[in-house]
Image (cartoon, rainbow, N blue to C red; front, side, top):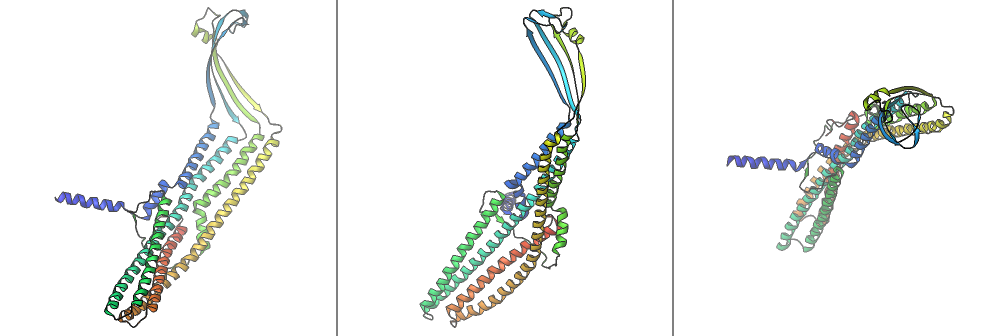
Length: 436
């Protein structure tokens, strides 16, 4: 019985653990299922395959062949080179190779370009995951915020229901008029409407988060609250953070590697203007049925032959063909430079906004908390007067609405502040270690 109880306890703990996700687990699901991130992974694999294909140009081309023919009528005897007029068979074997010796370092520069493109694609994978992680974090915080708002409005509904029950008893006792009950019920209806709206916002936020992870929505899954960060505000210099981030952020690194690749593309195109030196050779043997003196193997041994050839090809009007391609590559390089500049600009502006928002969110968070404390105390006074019958419904409804609005602002400010703290920490260190 003890073992059964322990087993049930462990099973319950396991099920509970499976029904709760923290933000790190959400990021793992994102990396596993998000199609945008998977697309960047495929692009990196394609760049790696393209690099292997480029490197294969340096390998010598080797081929082997065999042929069998039957000659009818007047022809040349392959063995004696004499004219004959008969039916005879001819079988040949051979192996050939060719390899470039010098081609203006064309393949070398193409390999260097391919290496940079591969590195750019691999770094871009991290950049895409980081961008999707930021969106995921926004969605995760939105789920927590909308849930807290829904719970707040649920508490407001419960408070109004309690007040309706109390006023109903007062109406039955004849101490207050029925009009007061109607006004309190109207307040309850407003609170329920706001509760339904908050619930819909919460469900929408959950759906968006599941879709971001590309996971089937599950109403049983709960999301773990974020641990509060140190509330001490450090006055950051946005320029200092940007200068450090520009050195390590994958978005910038990927754009820089992509820009550098065009320099080698230009060199590989210009290589077509240089002379081409190639080496080729072959080895073969044959058997002809016209030679009755030697069997198959001995005839192959007697007819073996080989060749080695060094060829030089000098382009005369090559520049006319390569000049437009070079101009296009240089334009593409300037476009890549512009993309790099835009990437740096966006990063700098995002950091500037994050630094500004952190201070703003901190101030809003403190102000909202103070507002809730003040309005909570004011509402307690109005509620006590309402219960004593010395306050009207207008004062009660107004005070309750102000408190509900302040509580909603405080909840939103709290989660905006938590989000902004983590976002700026990510910009400071350039990775997600310890951010979650």
